[in-house]
Image (cartoon, rainbow, N blue to C red; front, side, top):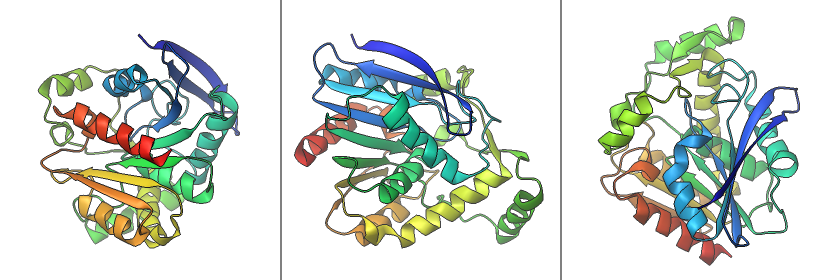
Length: 277
């Protein structure tokens, strides 16, 4: 049974934040920092965490601002770069990890976008980087008029709260997990005009910067993902070059860590991390 702890900390702008840590019974062989996706929180990765800690891996995570038990308007951030600063402050001031241990960073969906952006701006800090269903592009092309309206609105009303319009049925084929998601009071379906615009802009920018990858990188995506584009992930991996490993999971939905075959995903990641060491 993993040793679980929670902590409160302050971001660089004074925002109250919530963090969690799972430690294996024995001395950890490596540490994974987990960055969650839009509308969720760090506590939604229990199956993954239990499996990792049973393999001697320590896992740390925090609720993004505007999410879970952290402060801030739900689904909003004034500045994408502030979230990057949050990740840095968490890792090296608030997480409590031994930075002398090999550590990896793992990001899912929006968390994947944040993770690769952070890794590109902080090269050499990790033994490797893992992206799960990263948001480079959505699976559908938003109407141009809607994009123009969003950019206009975010310039004078950035905190305008909108529905994220995520259909839970595209997340996982596991119906039990879908039901538990619906009763999770820490989940939300909000996104602000500012954060929505920033997400799309950053995804496009990252596709253009993929050739800058100079660290071990694993990009995973399900080819039945109805939320984020697996074709965009394949394009990023191609541009990233030989440092990047691309794994397309046939028939998998968006939340790879919640699919019925999730143990295959966990084992694949752990084997990849061991090779990266």
